[in-house]
Structure formats: C-alpha cells, structure tokens
Amino acid sequence: MCANSLSQWSTWLLSVDWWYNTTYHTTIQATLYEIVFDQPPPMYFPYLLGKSWVELVDNNLARREEMLKLLKFI
Image (cartoon, rainbow, N blue to C red; front, side, top):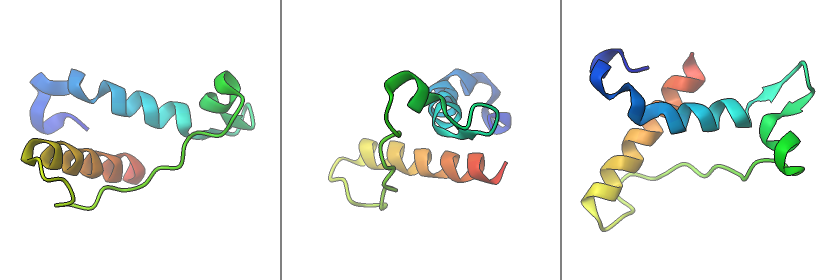
C-alpha cells in the first residue's frame, strides 16, 4: 500500500484503520465498528472526481478513492 512512497506510510494509517474496523470479521460475526458503537458503520459514498471546488480537497479525496480500491483488491 505504501511501497511507492515509503516515507509517507503514516499518512495512510487512518484509512487502513477505518477499513479494518469496518470490515466484517467472521470470528466475531460482526465488524469491530458494530461491536464498539452498537450500530453498523456509516454507508460509504464514493467521491466523484471534480465535485469539490477546492483543488486540494479534490486531490485528497481522489487519492483516498485510489487507496480504497487498492485495499479492496488486496
């Protein structure tokens, strides 16, 4: 996940944490989010490139989408 930018691995920790905590775990028959908050995780709505008027926000959300696709592939 961070092989292309080894010095920036820590910037992806929150995304990895969210993915892990909202993924269904067969051992506990739930997501960790559900165990902690007693409700399903919020519905994820993918970001459509170019929807933000702020270029920095657009770039960050586009990178998030790329990383989520990569996480789902792994």
